[in-house]
Amino acid sequence: MSTQPPLYGTKDASYQAAGGIEGLRCLVDDFYRIMDTWELARTIRQMHKDDLTESRDKLACFLSGWLGGPKLFQERYGQISIPMFHTSWPIGEAERDAWLGCMAQAIELQPYTPEFREYLLRQLRVPAERVVAVQRKP
Image (cartoon, rainbow, N blue to C red; front, top):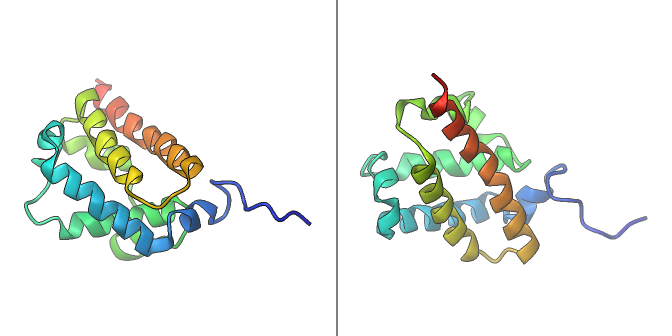
């Protein structure tokens, strides 16, 4: 019997590595704090309401299910297609890079292993790129 932890991306291994919902809420809090203060994120911050309470909850709930944990977003808000949800905002490469930059900084502040930090950011690039790809379609 193997004593190795499950691979990220299987079952709830990624969710557990992120610290469960409380760990994800810390990540999201840092993410939005960085977005509020980082000059390169000004454009994407302006796409949000002044009060980030709902945005914080939605992102933490989304990440929970996306990382193999409880499907909190579905339970609270219903189904979502990330690329289609973002079609109402002009999101190009600069906005994608700003979002990923905020997330990269927030990930670095978490008590994650270096391997999980790298894995998480690599995985987050996938939906971020899909949002830009949807914007490019005629």
